Structures are given as structure tokens and as C-alpha cells.
View 1 (tube, rainbow, N blue to C red):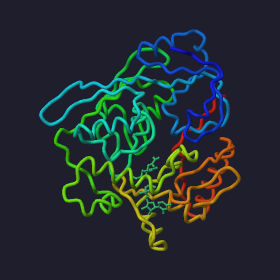
View 2 (spheres, helix red, strand yellow):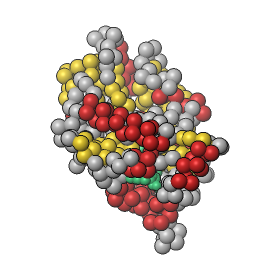
View 3 (cartoon, rainbow, N blue to C red):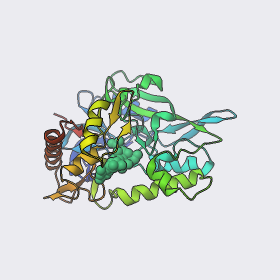
Length: 339
Ligand code: EPU
């Protein structure tokens, strides 16, 4: 395993922000992760795990060790009449994993097609889209405890999954390197077309297959979301706020274009994109940063943007939404600083 010094991270984050890591390594196995963490050069240094950097905002150089797990193997760990369990290395590209399942007729992750990132990041923020969440198929998460170097395993209930939430963003934040995620996939899948955009796109398909779902979702994403290869972005920049139902209903009375989404009983999810659009930010550019013209939840970092500039712009959006609607919108991206 090569350990690099003063690594340029610009190509390792989808916002394309310039930053350097004092140390950087991409361990390819559990053994290499343990070797890396045992190296006394890094013991006292802060450590950051980045996956494919699709949810990371670098505000400054990282004064520590950046780890990009590159464990790439996939194996079937169990099989029954109805389902199979697939143990997938944290470094596997998420969408390649989805394609791998769809190609074999294994159902459960097809609605999560086209999401940038690595398998290892999927349980951290419980990625979700088009009526599915990673938690619907995850059964086990294996990780290494950064402090003790012990290998640990959590079952899905122990991960405390919620909307864009898990134990890895709470009690275990910054304390783990996820090595493998095990998914349970259906051998006789039933497709999920409940999400309005998906239903609309597949209205003329009689019995949509996993392929049809995957294609429809990739097409929807392409139409709405910018490609990080063309302009720096991290997908949804904010989470959709969850408010009390009575509050949302009042808001709807004066705003008939508002669409509400289900949450836990008594609560409703409000699209942050709608709030941001109403505040006039959609399609706006300020110097090197902006809001995408087709989707107000996606912030853009044009060439030359700095992490600070983007963060200040995001804070301005957050303040404006709060002043107009009395709603707090929280960032989905992780702001990274080592000091
Ligand atoms: N909307 C607007 N203006 C916009 C865009 C959307 O008002 O510019 C409103 C519309 O009413 C629309 C609603 O927002 O019906 C929801 O929009 P969309 O279906 O695009 O979903 P979202 O809530 O904005 C979430 C996820 C996405 C995921 C989609 C589809 C979060 C933070 N984001 O976005 O995830 O693809 O649902 O399921 O929950 C990501 O995490 O990076 C991501 C792209």
C-alpha cells in the first residue's frame, strides 16, 4: 500500500474543491486498513474517511490522514429460495454495485441507481432516492474501530438508521472505517414505482423490470441533476426538513404549489428545494458558486470556487429560508476541517 504525502484532493471530491491532505492512503483490504492505522506516524493525527468524496466539503487543507477504503471484492454469503446476502467491499462504486445486482435480476437497490459514491458510504447517511433507502436492504455493516483496531459488526437495527441518519453520523462519527456492507436482495423482486416521477416515466410500461426502473431513474437524474464531471456538486446539499404536520398544513394553505412527503407519524418532510426556490436562489450564480437551474437543492462549485465561499453561500441560503419560513434546513454534506 502506498502512503502519499501532500496529496492533492481536488479530484477526490465531487465538488472539485482544492485541498491537500498531509497523508493519504487507499487500503485495499482489512489487513491493509489495520496496518495503516497501526503505523505510529499517524497515531496522534486526525483521520478522515472519504469514500468517493461525493458528500465532502473541504474548507481547508486536511492536517492529518485521509483514508479512501479500496476494498473491492463482492461475495455471496448466504442464499435461500427467496433472497441472497451479498457482502460487498466498501470501495466498490455504488452504481456499479447496483448495475451488478440488476444484471443478475437481484432486486432491492435498483431505485438507488445513479447515486454517486462508494458502497462504504451507503450506511453512513442511509442514502435514499425514489422511494428506497439503503436501510431497506442492508443487513450487516463490518467496520474497524479506529482507536482499538478491532473488527466489529453491526446488524441493521444496531445501525439506528433514519432519514439520512445512522449511528455512523452520531455515536460512531469519526471512529470507524467501514470495510464491508452486506445486503439482502430479492431473487423474485417486486418493483417499486410509487415515487411520482418514476410512476410518470413508466406509465406505459406494463410489467416494468429492474432494468426499466434503473433506466427510468438514471434518465430522471440526468434531466435534473448536474454531472460532477461537468460542474462541481455534491448532489443534494441540504436535507429535507421534517416539521410538525400542523405547521406544514398551515404553510400549504398559503402555498398551494408546496408538495409534502411522508415522515414519521405527526410529522411531514418539506422539500428543501421548494423552500430554496421560493427564496429566489434557483439558477442564481454568485462569483464562483451557485444553485443549479434545474434543481434548487444542488449547489454548484464552479472552477476556482473555494470551500469557504461555498459554505458562506450555503449559510446565506439557510438564513434566508429561516427568515422567510421559520424553518431550519441542515446541510447534508460534511464540512471537513482538521483543526
Ligand atoms: N422541488 C422544487 N424545486 C426544485 C426541485 C424540486 O420545488 O428545484 C420540489 C418539487 O415539489 C418536488 C420536490 O421538491 O416534487 C421533491 O423533489 P425531488 O423529487 O427532486 O426530491 P428531493 O426531495 O429534492 C430527494 C433526495 C435526492 C433524491 C430525490 C429523489 C434528499 C436530501 N434528497 O431530493 O437525493 O434523488 O429525493 O428521491 O433527501 C442526494 O441525496 O444527493 C439526492 C440527490
